[in-house]
Amino acid sequence: MLKGSAALNEIFSLHYDELVRFGRIRIGNAADAEDLVQDAFLSVRRAYPDKGAGELRPLLFTTLRNLTLDYLKSGYVKHRRSAAEIGPLNEVLACPRSATPETQVIDTELLAIAETAIAALKPRQREVLHLSRFERLTHDQIARRLSVSPRTVRNDIAEALARIAKSLARARPD
Image (tube, rainbow, N blue to C red; front, side):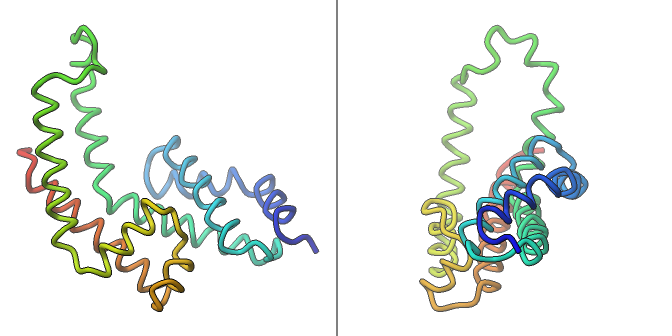
């Protein structure tokens, strides 16, 4: 029975396409689904280095499911959709990737709103978000560090992201 990296490599070769399909169905974007599948493999590799192939497959699907939920709750999808709606205007602009003074002001305002929302989070949610997004710790590592369950970590991250997304959504005049 394969274990560790060898098991993960086998799962990757056998189930990568299935995982990407699962992610794409859940979030509706193939490129982002591929990124989330990669994130899932990295998370599982870090969290479960000694598991066998039979144990890794369900862990990967569960991890990917949680990543897609985080992705959907993050507000990124709404932002991407609104950007796609103005996509044809980019062709009219001389340099669509350069920040205009207007977008710089908007970005600064959105950053301030996000920072205010983060500051308003409960202390543990703020800490969990920091450990997850900036220190790139897994849910299990965060749970051990803070003496809480991995489910609590997942819930704290989801609630924190939802609150930040809600604050940003309220700020956008749609």
